[in-house]
Image 1 (cartoon, rainbow, N blue to C red):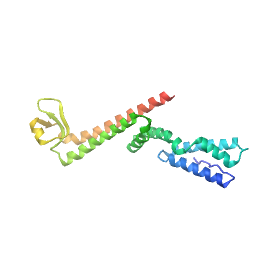
Image 2: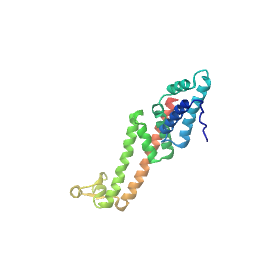
Image 3: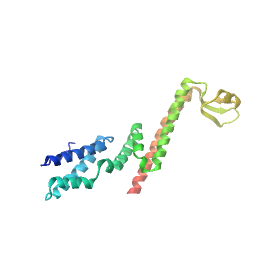
Length: 205
């Protein structure tokens, strides 16, 4: 969809308008093209309608008043961009979108910091996969011989292994198990994040 920019009679007005709309584009650059265009169109329409309703005023004064009421795009759009980014992240399950969304939402509640920490824990599984490749005999899921309780998930000291009489349970299945764990917990955490967002929307409505 092509968005028609507003044409002004005065060059100064055109420059002010163009600069303001560029700032809107920049403030929403992390969003999808559709969301960017929706926000751009909304601001553009508001400016156009306000200009039409204030034709008796000087063009540049009218534009400056409108922009002042709308506020700085960098500040005004911050919560909207954060919410739209979170919506995009929970729909696509894209890890890059998820991390960007959480960072943008840090100021919207401690729960988003908690979710960010949960995602970071997933890197622990990635670390264990590489550790298993380089030290296969010292990395795994270790249990005590006379007990079903897990003693260590990760790296174990050879002395502790002998002292506590532990054995590695998964063997060659350790890496596939860690990969499945990463996928499972990533999907679970993202679904919980999506659920939290839906609760927030119901509360606001």
